[in-house]
Image 1 (cartoon, rainbow, N blue to C red):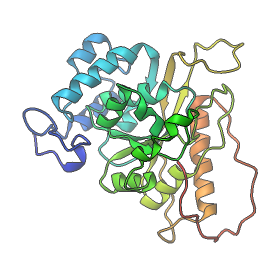
Image 2 (image 1 turned 135 degrees about the vertical axis):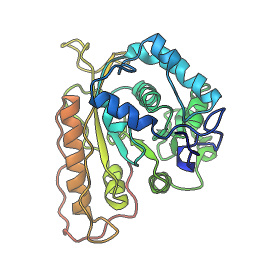
Image 3 (image 1 turned 120 degrees about the vertical axis):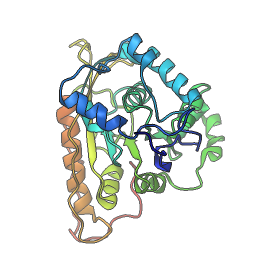
Image 4 (image 1 turned 90 degrees about the vertical axis):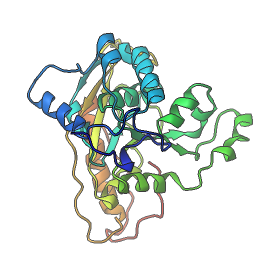
Length: 302
């Protein structure tokens, strides 16, 4: 039965969900059940035929065309996907991934949104990517959260940074998305890390958001099995595997704000899960003494 699509399921810019009305809101549940029962359907790494014929009920015509074109471009970059059933939900969640190449930031969101029928995951994205023609259009249409904190290596480009300063901080935008039952995506390492063995210590924004919004974190590990054993860094064009873990449910807080100890403990659990899924190791930053009940800082980068 088709019902009117709620606001959180509409395309980010407020456009129509599709051309003929609201999508069937059982789409994601049906996809999850099909996978759980091992029934045939769209393969995790879809063929050209499956991409062309795939249903994207949560998108309008323009976005359906763009998403399918992107899938045709990036599908050879993905060798395998496991755990897709964990993201086939309309419940809000925080997707937390390791970050080894720049290309992941386009490939992984495209693949996951395709399998979610066009239901978006709002990823954090550095403002510099909005300077790239074509990519800027994709980022706007996919509802990314602009993060304007980093400085570009090109000094001239930094003159344009104020143009991308959002009216609301990225952390608050993410809170608003979660409150509206939308999913967000975060690379907690904070930058590209080509080390094939170790994750960076990471930033605590995803852990804080999860605790204070009481939403689960879905850890994702990206692996590069075709990488040569002698390579000391993961190359940009390496094909990847995407391993999606079961949701991590945050512990309940005694108050609405998480203190530093609670955030650090939850961050360690998230990063450890990402490490297992990505086949890497993780170590926290060198410990800093603080009182367990000390107040949390006002903002954390994700």
